[in-house]
Picture 1: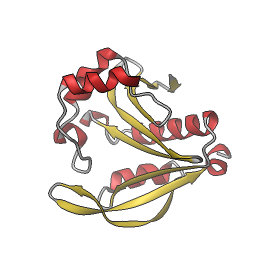
Picture 2: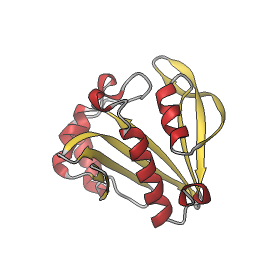
Picture 3: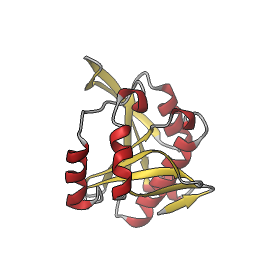
Picture 4: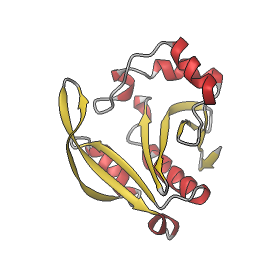
Length: 172
């Protein structure tokens, strides 16, 4: 578990799986996040393998200090030296309050302090301006546009890729 001024990022527990299912829809994930239908049975089955906490992939819960869960963090360890992160604030009232930036800062510091990672990447829909602001505020650098990168809402969407290097995060 990592904490910072009332924000907590922790591993998922079995009691959280119903919430993961509840958030697996377009309303909770917002206009720019894709989702796939999943039954609670399948979510539990996947959770039983490794608790969504393996050497290659981690799904973590974001909650505020009064134990209200607000979203999820995804960490993919792509290859030696490279990780990709994704953050989804699923509770609408948690958006626009700085939780996304704080969670991004916490996760990048956690990764750089605990794994031999040199570079962390994040991507977002070209039209998702709030997510781009979060990444820039967290010292990620915009690298370019990935054309027709992800199929979402019935069309191929362009995405923007951002990155931060170990020396950029640990020097701040």
